[in-house]
Image (cartoon, rainbow over all chains, first blue to last red; front, top):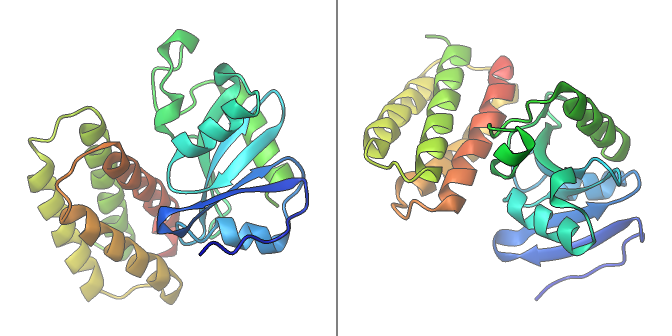
Length: 130
Length: 94
């Protein structure tokens, strides 16, 4: 049985799926309580998909694909979405995801290659998940 | 090798495994899973920072699931790549 709770509108709770994954759409700085929830899936490491244009992100879950789908359904453009992670243990951000492989945007790696996009991703992550 | 070196070796192997599985190249999977398992066992025998213990336990649980799951699909690949990232970050804590 799912235990759905009330969340602030800015922290839309998306789903609890198999394996008790927690995935949130985050449009304003997340609460400490919900930050802990999204960090559970990987022991303090949070998978994120960032919309660098709308400056929102999804946090948590086990696959970037799930976060990407939520943002696309919300109207994000594929070309604005980049996957990565935030490690709460070390404070490090990474820019590594299978959804980043987009040769048509000159990104031929799972890592985000463009330094300016990396900077935007870092800024949005720090703004919304700290 | 010390705990940090072993953790980084495991991280590199998890990255290799994730990439290969994602690309459908599974012929070397067994060999590298075994090598990673050896690194993990070596890591468990040496002195480590207590701050790293929770990460090590979580990784070991996940790794055993991956090792026992020969359904090499995109979920397998993504989990391996995620642990590659986590261990790369946290090697400094080991």
